Length: 415
Image (cartoon, rainbow, N blue to C red):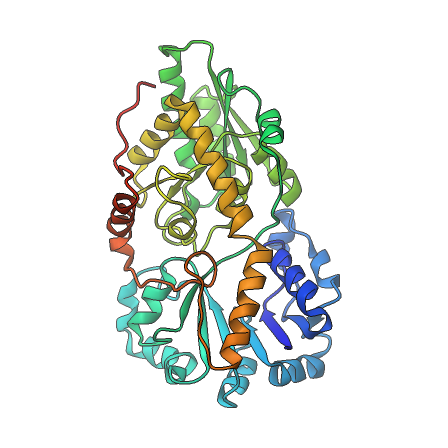
C-alpha cells in the first residue's frame, strides 16, 4: 500500500507519526511539503531538519514527482497545504482520500450561514460526501463544524497531532520531579498572544502568592515556569515585576522542543489556557507525556479527546479563570491525587495518543477502506468522532464522568 501525506511543511508534531508510517511502509510512504517552514516558527526554536528525512518530497523543488505521488498513491492524506488544486484533482478522479482538518468555524459556527462560505465548502467538501473521502478530525469540535455543512456523514474519526513520545519509569519520573511537598513546579508553554491567555498565569501567581503567605504549610514553595515569547512578553514581564512575582515566576523565553520537554518533565502541574481559537494544542500531549496533571480549557481542540476530568487531568469552562484557579488549588491541596492524574496522563499518551499507535491504527483502517470495510477502534485515534456542539461539550463530559462514577464538580480547596 502506497500512502502519501501532503501538508504545508513537516514539523516536530508530525515527524513521530511519519517516522512510524515509514517504518511500517518503507519507500511506499511519502510526505509532500508544499512550502518552506516560516521564519516565525524558526524563531520559536522549531527545526527545519525534518525536510531532510528520506520520505520528504518538496513540492517547490520537484513538482512533477509530487504530482505523480498524489495521483498514483493508493491513499492520499490531505492536510492543510494551500494547494487545494492538487487535492481536488485526486478527488475528481474518485480515488481514496483521507482529509485531516482542524476546525473550519473556530471563530464561531454562525459563519456557516454565509452563502459564499457554503459554496466554497461545498466545492471542497460536501459534494464528495458519497465518494471514498474520509475525515480525520484534529480536534473535538471539528466533527460538529463539518456536520453543519453535511460533509463526511458517518466518515469522521478522532485524530490529532503526535509530538515525540518520551518513555519513563515511575522511579525516573519521581526522581526528575523531586519532592513536591517542598517545591511544586507549575508550567505554562506557548506563544504569548491573546488567544493563549498567558496573563492568567500572573493572576494565578499573585493569588497563590497571597495564599502562600498564610498557608497551612509554610514550608511549601510554588514556582511557575513560563516557556515561550511573543507580542505580550514585554507587558507580562513588566506586570510580573510590578506585582512582585519575580521570585515566583521564571520566563524561559523560546526553547527548542527538547529543552521545553526537559522543563515540563520537572513540573508537577501544567496549565493550558488557550481559548476556542486553539485548533488542537500539542502542548497538552507533551505535558501529559511529561507526567504532569494538566488543567486545561475545554474549548481547545485536544482537551476533550485527551483529558477525562479528575482521572488524567482537569478541565474548566471556556475562559473561566476562577474555575481554572480552583482546579489548580485542588491539585495543590491533594498531592497524591495530583500524582495519580499525572501518571494516568502519561499512560494516556504512551498507550494510545502517540505517533506509533496512530500510524498502526490508520494503516489498519486504510487496509479495510481499500476493501470496503470501516472498522474504527473503540477509543483513541481513529475511533468515531462524536458530533458535539462547542457549547454542549462540558455537559457531554459531565455525563461521561457520571458514567465512570467520578464527580465532576471541583470542591473548594484549603489552599
